[in-house]
Amino acid sequence: MSPEESAAVAAWVAAFVAIIFGGTGFIVGLVGLRHARQAKEAAAAANLIAKEANGISKKANFLSNESNEIAREANEISGRVSELSYEQHDVVWEWEFDSANDGVVTIQNLGKDEAHEVTIQFMFESTTEANPSPIQVAGREVVKFTIPTLRESIAKERAEERESARHAGSPYRSPHFPSMYRARLRVKWRTARGTPKQSDTDWTTAYLPT
Image (tube, rainbow, N blue to C red):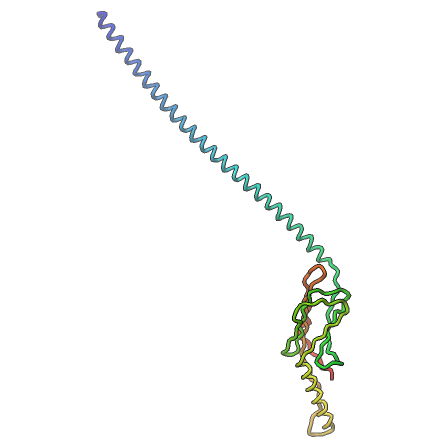
């Protein structure tokens, strides 16, 4: 082989080797680029997860603080309820027709404690009387209500009694028997500490004072 041919062969071999190594470098570069992109995406995902975790942590701290505040308020309410449940309060209500004053009902706090913000309703048959605004009623204090229909009923009973007495012994007229009337007392009030109370006698029957 002549020197020229040897040089040509050597040139072709060198070119072939360069092509092979160049292709390998290109492939390695592509692989490296792919790995770099994957690493970048993984880093971005990690940052996103870290941000979400931080947000969740803040929400958890907020909920924890809210829970502690609710627990504190619940303990305070429980303490107040416990105090009120042991509150000493002596108030008992009783009513009667005032025999000295026609049409008057006396309502008394028989207990020794004062009743606050008292609202009284007294019902006689179909009539209801009530105090126009809340009042204070001390222990043993008496409140009086005047009921026009009660006065009318008493007057009617007395008239029938007189008429019956006038015809006493007559076989043509039966004796008069007093009628019974329905009455009911409802009272709402508060204790000194503000605890709401209520008393209701429900409907009872009674004779009128004649």
